[in-house]
Length: 88
Image 1 (cartoon, rainbow, N blue to C red):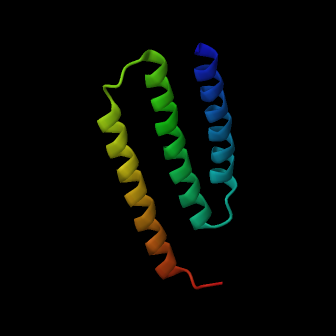
Image 2 (cartoon, rainbow, N blue to C red; image 1 turned 30 degrees about the vertical axis):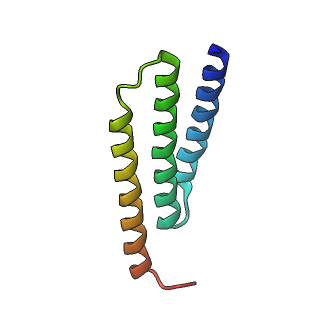
């Protein structure tokens, strides 16, 4: 069962690297906002996988609050960008 967790964490790390690349070379502000939101989601998923590997569920409430704050932040930023940039 350990190899499942290690494979999951490795794939999440690769996805995180790709998202960081997208964050650095994103063309628009909205691309960067979406990549930050995906990066936060990957961090939460990796933390959940690590908690499953260690069989310790003490941080679930903290992770849910962190994911909710990241979601609200990305929605707020997207709404601000929507008002600033004209439609294409």
